[in-house]
Image 1 (cartoon, rainbow, N blue to C red):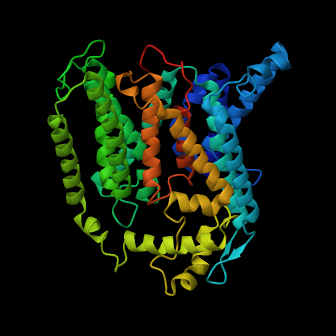
Image 2 (cartoon, rainbow, N blue to C red):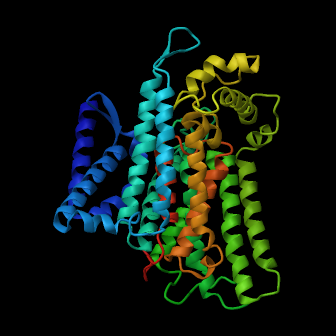
Length: 489
């Protein structure tokens, strides 16, 4: 059976790359559809590769081949002069080059300091640290950055960013339907009866789907009442027909259906960190949008109807969360017993001590599970609630521990540049259409905010699909000015 799956794997990968020869841009834009296919792996010369990795590496080789062909046709110097770094361009991707190089250098440092082998606490199990670090380096560091480069080279119109977001959302919908089936059939694969889809943890599904929930909420809102079509003093009203975009348009019903499915499944993942992250990001995005609307229209009246409607929706969601599993919600604040809160306190204590001892180099890519198990008792002074812990349950601690201080500084540098790229658009995006650069950038910033807020309580990066998702959002934010298009994709 494994041999047959490997054949299908190779046939699909080859077929996709042949398709890319004919429609290279479309093949690149569709990559987000395949983010979850990291679960499908094969061994190539003894090295495991996921399907999405093979597609990215294959497309990048094709991209280099196309570049070389153009180079021979036009000559070396004309091609070099067109590159942003040499033509004086201040586009953000060019500015991102240096922090990305530092980020990769931090990952190389994490690869070098990783242990070859670590004997686990039972004295028998061997943790192959170098092998784990190499796998993380190629799949979570290099492949996503190459994908980011492909996106930057391919995207020519702002609507293509929406197309990539749509492909990503389609993948989330499929996983959510899987999770919804688990809820309906009560066939959970997790011991705590939470929707997890194909993943071993419900948190994995919540981490991957949270940005899509906000994206669909924005698309639903734009399809029902876009700011640019509202008349003065009628912001709270919901027109059911608008100029050039009637609600009856089939695409809008798909947005509404997808949003309801994603929201429902997010509730059944019971990931409160993901819910809080989506809520904070929604308040950020819609709060800025309507603040700018009232300033622009010089409306003095407080929008109490909109606030009441939003409050009622938030209250309904909170009630649904409580009814789905009130015991889990109550246990969050009971730190004296074994629950997610007390486990996180222990994990943070151990991670901070490891960081104190290895503040510059970190502990190496992917080394936390083994070192945690061996050092937990010595640091805590007692047996931990959980013996097996993949990550420190915090994006920033994990980034510093895995990539050292240089990699962590590079990550903060990248975040700063992404925010700076959006800064001038925060006051203009409200009156932009959904397919225009200002709105896409701020939407990308709101999706990034979900990752950063969720990162305070989990690790929304160090996993194949999550690393790819981060760089997808970054690609949306750094979309150069002047790449808007007239029609919504």
